[in-house]
Image 1: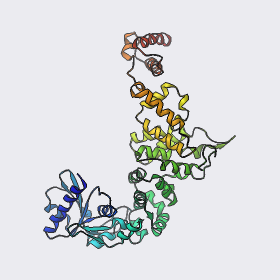
Image 2: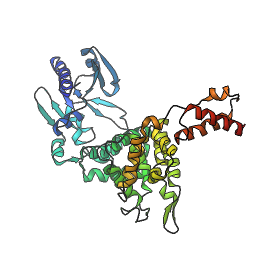
Image 3: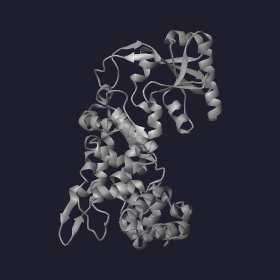
Image 4: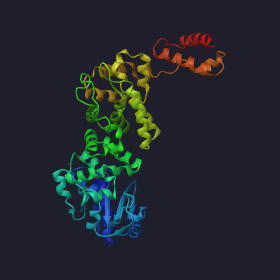
Length: 439
């Protein structure tokens, strides 16, 4: 639904509440985005109507958080959170209030996280209502906690990660007192669920400034809690002829800055591509990190498990980390190896990891350009051709299914990818030769 239509429907909800004697206002992110000149992705509404009253006034509702005063009003394909003005009680779990009491609009915004998210808008009067200084902070491009930042972060520890996300999303500075409170309370973010941490990291690292995000997380002490393996890269020296930019952490931040609208898997693989270097650091004839990509892939898998990622996410991230160096000698790579890489679903992301890795070090993109050219020449069809023979052919040849099947089919596939076998007749002849030899 276009933004104008979405806003029109949200305004209609406000009008319906007002017609029935209630006060209703746009709240939070939609007001912030409109003041920033951005298109709101959704509209939240705050009202003095209770959840029961909201559900009576609208025919299609879902009481997703009625105990917190939140009801979802469904209009066609779209959903709008309509929440009763409230004040929160004590937060025993550092995430959700134990109790809530219904209140007025000023009390409602003063319990929220940041001033830029604490704005209200009367869409019928076209008037912004600002009880917390959010408008001035938008003008100043500042992320600032509402009230006492220590209290805000003690109430909900996830807000510390959200502060980084909003700063990076909008390119805003973090208020000094807010930053100080995060540094003091950063160890407590460990009590936040892995799923919540992963969700915030995903939103932040796939946003417009992932390099800023990594640096902020480290500077605020959050990185050493959520991803201590990344913090461990600080101060790990690299050979200056290959990495004039500095240590492993500096290189990683620069890599993140070269990404453009990355997928979650690409962002994490870039962040973790050199995660194995601190563990493999040695000085012989020069600084070396022997097998750091293999060690890094194992570490990446453990991190993905810790953050409760899906198996598909874990496999892709580990695959990219394990192979992030393979294209540096692409011109010496066997045809079959290059074709197998090209046939993999993660190929485009692997190419991007190589690109940012090169740009953030010596700037040499010759291997990247060579690989792109060869890929264009090969094409997807030649990279993953239809097999010339299969198991049925082996059975017809008189072989019994078993381990030898895989040996023969793998050998023929290799020769097909190397283009030493190009026809079915050639493949059947080679199959007979291999069968005689292996059986």
